[in-house]
Image (tube, rainbow, N blue to C red):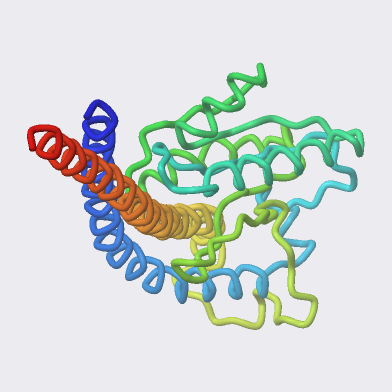
Length: 286
């Protein structure tokens, strides 16, 4: 009987776990739908802004706007890593951390100094454990990123580039393709790549003035790139969590089936033994 009680206790425990993972799967599905809508809303603007800024680039503008400068040699680079604040989302965080670690190792192997800027508890905890110095440690990014949050994260790094304290800025985040495909990617935010075949700023009629527009649009380009990455990261996190919780729910179902069969076999053996004892006792009395 002790064995049967242990199996029943395990069945109850697995049932409770399956209920939790099923609930988390449903919550992640709901959040992912809203996050996906934000991704689809953010992408066209980000793509259009990128085309405009790359099309406007010229060496003359780089002399007037530090954000457009292109260093002859990269001596120091900033790496901005976006991770989640929570776990239970499969390999989502570990893939991002591995991507950032590989990038840092490659830069250092090329003789480039690196500085770390991290948003997300999981990334902060990992590099803190490794003893890496972090210039930025942000754990206050929510599941619904805002442009203001992106600016607070991006502004100091952009300023360091304009002052010449870093020569390149890399962004490591997830690319949201679908709920099942959220691979990590590395993007070079700064320096800004120009489109050699595009028209210069002189080819546009700008109002109120070219300087007034460029002073707004150039910082907005970097800020929006990080905002879009935050939005995609949030959607990718929920997609990865939904997949992980669905797999956990399915696995719990398989374990329950096995435990139920084990319990039934143990119960049948117990009943058979009791019947045998009754028959044996009855025969002894005759």
